[in-house]
Length: 552
Image (cartoon, rainbow, N blue to C red):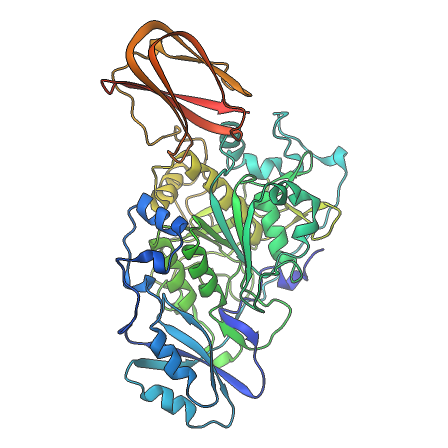
């Protein structure tokens, strides 16, 4: 199901959960401190999950004042003010969104009188209605171009994968296994019954869902835009489509109330980003953007595109600085009244994604930079002209559509696989490294940025180092293997020998102990998932040798 042409690059409500009502006004209440909070940075397990703590530990991301939840006593005191309802809090920006009944002239004055309240302001909705031409093209098998590998039959999505050389990194076993991607969008209509996602749901690849607009966890009955975005990442239908991170795990977060033009709270996306951080997501991708308030007097201007004015841009930078790889669509406004990127594409620490076509030309609609403070945007580009996506129904049909809404997740999935292959990189190094591999690195500009990155331009790295054990002593076969793998040692390795199998994140998944190792020894690894691993032999005197192995 296709979206309205003028709505593909979605209307985003930054601060919304509930549709506004004529009898109420919504206000953002900013706090000056977190005094009296029962939370401490020395006990992050009280407000972050183990997965989030592990990400911080792995990449040496320090805990910060912004990680602490808003002081509960402040929320309680504001909630106690007559005619005031606290809708939700943002720990990163340290404040709450409240609803005040009309006719209550004293409520806001009472809130403003509290010593910890630094400011209040009306909450408004950003919206961006930019023309994007969709070209529905439901096709049969005869019109599809499959990859040259029988194992990876990408169908119509082959070229959008090939442009990034993501098929290369897939062929090395990196397809997003054990990586976690948060997708923030307007809804994922029918994704739970669409056969292109059968593999995703059958393996438990959807870790969870949240609806920050209506509440609850059902994100499958709203808008179709997020479903199409998800298909760029996770769809698998051989001969038709395969996403760029088909084996990653996903959080599906609804942050946008697409069907309405009502005044809604602006912090939905910020809440979604804070949630994604707290549950340990590594990658955050969003195909949304904003330029105007419902009240024209409060519209953004180009001068606001400095990465530190709009709340969502501030939050996007905070997410990146907490160790997440954050990607956002550049926008589809080029050729229209607002040709520049939107919010939060101006954020300095994120990857802003423009769109190219099948010939690698920048599409006519892809929004351009620079930012108001002169930085180049977008950062990178991927296929957004006639990209292959899935229709939001139960047939598994796919078609071609236009928009940076699709170039962003296509690139996000590929970068996720790249990060999986380079687990000792942090998010900043992932983006910086891929900029250096990109097609326009020598002369970046404000239409394609640094260009199209190459996912296989950098040799696969691991967290391990070899030392003095003779490599000729250690041969593995077959490689790739299906279930059994053999080690052949021509010269005896005396004493105690440890054989360990690591996954790409550096975790030990198998351990074997031998004594005076020589000859051929076989090991059954049939219970491991397909993918890339590393087999390491270590001796009692700390000598070791490492081999990459691939299970398929």
